[in-house]
Length: 264
Image (tube, rainbow, N blue to C red; front, side):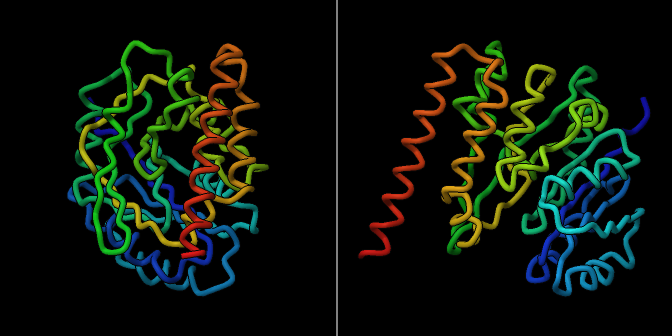
């Protein structure tokens, strides 16, 4: 069996403050990826200069794509199109991989010939504290994946390694969604996914205040509802409306907590 070829796709946008550390976690992998693709979304800061300097001595091929500003979905799509590997590993520009990420996923690919989608546990790092998020325990074997993803989200984008051909067959990420385009993509693809969840944390999410605020915004809320609506045919009406109500309750609780913190 030939070694799986994994292309790393990392979208960037005004990421000068953190992208060097992110790239370093790719360069220091115990097993090198097939290639690294930095897909820049029209940064107006020094991101591209930092990227070029950080990747100058990379021990594997590096592509640096310069795109007009169209959002993270478009940047990821450009990276997928440019990739030459059989597999795509996504890495956002402010997340950090464990040094054995590629090694561990490669082993899983070699052991599961019929699988087209891998994901693993994650660490969240906020205010100096590291917290494990056990995504693998949320997945239920035997229950249709669309039904699960409508009400139990357990896929972190920087934890995903997916076959390139299935991403292309679904026409990539929805570029009209300014946020939640990753959730919508996994939901849309879910009927065709044969998934393995790796019960090991192989990425750190650095929860910056601005990213937390964006995920709690009304715009993000509306984009999640659009993702539900686009894929509503995957579930029955009860499950569809339950998903909306459940997410609305979670959103309102987060909004209330934010207001209370500001008033205290």
